[in-house]
Length: 342
Image (cartoon, rainbow, N blue to C red):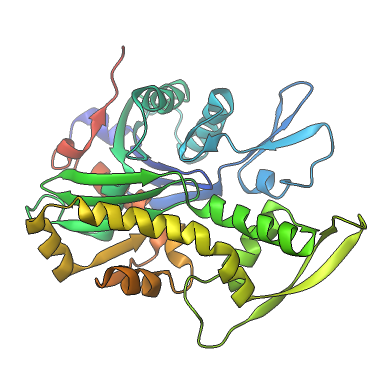
């Protein structure tokens, strides 16, 4: 620990499509906000960032737009992402006289060099002294407490808002990974499409997410549940209520869940036999917000015949992993990519 290290706030960021979490060394998780920015269209002025902006989604008057600058786990709108990151860094770095922070940011394992550079530049422009990137499944595995440096294999499935990452990890590396851009957002879209097609009912993103969280499931429930939803009748054009059951929600989600399960199957097929036997012994670990979908672990267990466990507090595994890396930079140097100035 140099004198500089004690003067800088090191930060770990799980930059997610749906939510961004920030970990500060020595303090733990200090921020968990939706990755949404509300701007005024005419002037481009930022009106709100995070929770306040998310509440505006689907409700904004004509002159205001609520933007999610990350799509499928990568930066889709560079300028807005930079403002988002800068705002979050400013909120957590209290002492202005200290050195700029070192930042560890998690990125999906399937992203391109150009997309990596966008994340890196955003963080540097937002005030980071040094930027290190870590692949999401690796961060999740470290956050869960898996022995990533050992030769035995571990399989992790991290289902976020924009991407699902399926990775087999051993010896500080990802042996094989499948990164698909099908995750929580697509589950929300599936509910919207189902209601539109079958009931001529139009609902917004926030309502779809609420339905998924309250009554969504991937496996039959012991006691099926239902909820009242409100939307707009596409034929009559007026607001309408509908009672939706967990059976209908499961039906609407089934195709999207099948895509994720197929990706898991492919990942298992590509796993070397020695590591496959480790996975049979240890099981698969589910992390990310998608791990909270009821019965997803049971469904995966049924499809793969492997033990499947949901990580403790799956939403924070990735950011907790970045936090562990901050506390032992040298020990984890093999899993980090240093930012290069090209």
